[in-house]
Amino acid sequence: MLEASRTLTTKGERDQRHWTTLLITRQVMLLFVQYFFLSYVWCFYITWLPTYLREGRGQSLERAAALAVLPLLFGGFGSLASGLAPAKLPRRAIAFCGFLSTAILLVTLTHIQSVVPAR
Image (cartoon, rainbow, N blue to C red; front, top):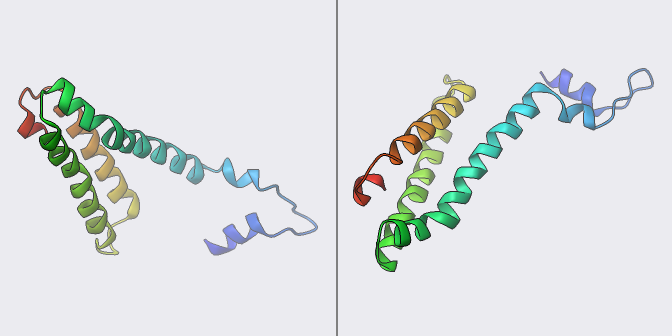
């Protein structure tokens, strides 16, 4: 694995590759997609969730702040848990399960009428 990476970064006389070659590899493209969706959800939680709770669900400013911090708190716990997961679990499986569960919860969240179960 390291030898393949070394060939992308070293410049030999026979095989000179530009750094953009690294950007179009499958692994890097998957990382781009993964972080796009991660940033999309993160942006919602940071910028729009408190406003949505106040305006869309009629919560007070204090209550909206208390509810808005919960997804971020549990996201931190999830990051710690996935970092401490056994080395036998593939990182792809951890990332896939995390993003799949987030997608399922976000879709389910749109159908909940009450504020407290939706947090």
